[in-house]
Image (cartoon, rainbow, N blue to C red):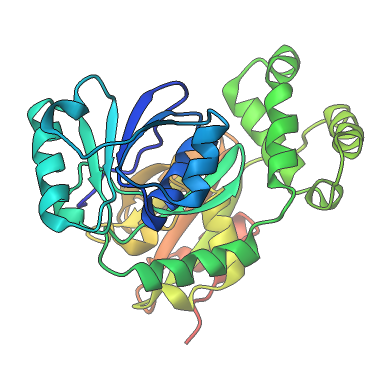
Length: 312
């Protein structure tokens, strides 16, 4: 991992941008949306930036950069078209332990800006660490087609219900299961207003959760892209993942991130499943292709489950 992914709160933080051209325009626009208090140093200014300065959305200091200009800032952006100057800015800021970004120069960055999908307050960020910006843009375009436009509405509404849901459900597990059921409702997926979301919320709140433990048996192979959509969906729903000894691999990583994970062997699998299902957990067992543990067919029959095959 070349860069640790993190979201920074820049509201009212003092941010310095050096450079007044088109590159600075793009960065300033994002920083303003994050609520940063921006100071910009440059002898000349792009008309867009000049308009922001005239409307007091940023502070423009009309001069050439000097080494002590970085003092007192939380974050520094070097956006000039002179590499040697950008590197000097990075050196000056690094000496004062200030996080710095030299645009389009990952080797002189304490942090980088990813490609973003903004459904505020939902944000999705994708990065290649500067290795392949075109590929990242391609990935972002694919994600844009998958993420509904009403994510902002859903996030805003659900955030307002946190205290309300805590009063109704006493445990984190109960609350999580409610929200999982809620977000999968067709009327929620298609909602365009808080009123529609509230109707669905009240209806589901008054319905008892009759779900019990479930067993999902997923066949894996050599290529994770051959997993079916159903397999991926169930792997994301599972609360507990059982994987074969020595196979803590990409298929385990594709399962739900906060699911508990445990290794199994042929001699232990039946008891492990029985124990977990008795706790009403949703259990996913990953089975390598052509290497199913002995007695798996009987286990599937006993728990009314079936093997979901890997394509190919």
